Length: 578
Ligand code: FES
Image (cartoon, rainbow, N blue to C red; front, side, top):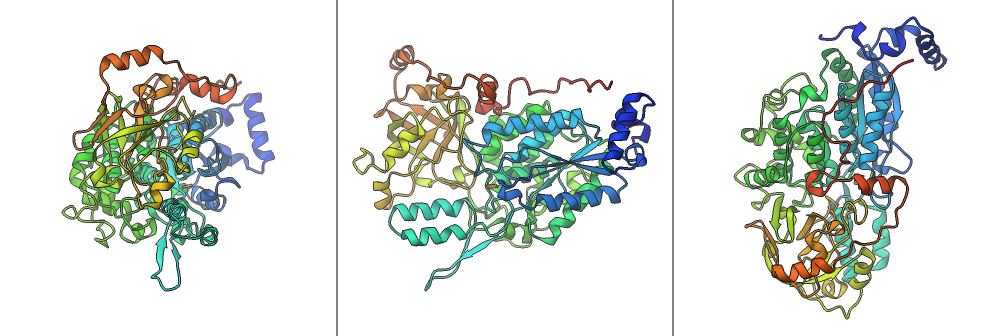
């Protein structure tokens, strides 16, 4: 033990002999706590992102009880603190607009209240980086308790073999089939009952599972915890252990600043590549690293994307789901396969090193966790592109793109807004063919605002009917981690702040060369300079409120989209207690 009872942070509120501390103890007793509960135990915040509109977190109220049991068994006292739930599908215009809001809320909850450590209950896409960013900045001992993926579902059609279906990826697949007339409207409506069989996060290797896995790889979650299905009894046991462990972290004073360094973030990035993880991770990883004072760049991610093959055979890059991954050994087994790429001596919340955590954790199914000599994709999970169209970088999920489109030249068809694009896609007279490069702008952090997941631009209906299922698409938006296709994303700087995407015109030639990492607008510099001189920024209707704050302070995609005033490790004083 490195910390004593007298050194607990919560004693600043409860242990003094003045009138203010009397009031704190009095109010704690009003809630049914005993005097010794606040004076003789570490107080653990159970940060809970549950809400009635967050289906992925529907079980987190019960899981919070399991966490509390663990805290009590270890001699701590748990207090549940609700935080913004950010259910990915229901929150508009996009949860990304509120990731920094959640991060601020978690940091300030922990700062303003008498707590010594925290368990973070989250899992739906932005809730993981949001809670972790806040916890890193507050730097109290904290453990992440992942919500866990929903159960696999099966879809049966008479006369056809059963299909295992999961959330997100299959919705897009069936939608394209509907647009192409290959399934009828009645079957489409029937599909509403499928794919989301239980509470829990999306069960593909979408953003949710990518981010929870990254947090486990950082050493902030228990080994193997992220792949445990939300409805598995093992998930309840894992939650109890999180509570128990949180108390140990307080006594050992194992804060994020003592666990995280550049090696930890490179471990997380390498793991993300082996998972074939979501492109969204490129933004969140950089944002989390900057909170920890670690320099991590898109170039680091590109290098690891070249070096680490995709081994996890999971949708959308593969054809299995998270439940299969859990049975195959989960993240420790995957990380053990790439252990030569990892910094094994990083400390973790278990109190042991990463190397100790993954030692002897073997993959139990080589079809789900592929061996190094038989990867799912040789293309790499993520490639970073640069060129005159993306001076600060853009990303593509090469493993989920069509191989024949990784080198492509085509004429641009440009849309200035999502509604304009959406209307055009259903226009059968649209001047487009499969070689066209679809371009969407004003969809970045400032422009949209919030950088929504519009980057998987739909294929025009008339091409869907002809059997086209993929085209090169370019935007300053993000793409859902459950989606797939040859989509160039996160073009930085974005068009709304004058990035070159703002200068593209319909009919311009664009060259994409993923092996060479190039994204080039084939327009000469003099012509671009004339267009720039004539460019004016789009009008923004937000003159007050959080969105106004967001637009004034959000950084660009290659910088993590954090607020400029939240990055870094400059200390914030503890609150005065009077
Ligand atoms: Fe919550 Fe996908 S919608 S994890």
